Image (cartoon, rainbow, N blue to C red):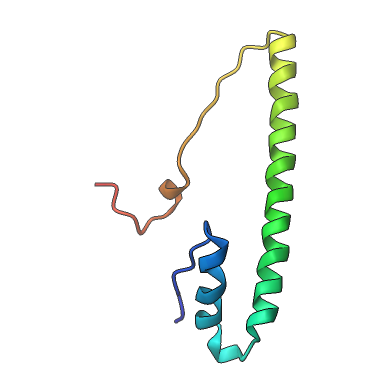
Length: 85
């Protein structure tokens, strides 16, 4: 069982963490860094798309005066390993 901690919020910390976690695969640090760069870029593209869709949706709701309810939570609630106690 292999479950290393990966600091996904910090690209500079993520690369060495992946190098260490994936040591058994004998991957080059350069290849891991390139993969992280591509993944980071794609994540930013997804976030931008999400923000644009949200803006369009909110604009439509306001323009058409559609009653709206927004339910929001935090992603850590999806982790059963966290004590909510």
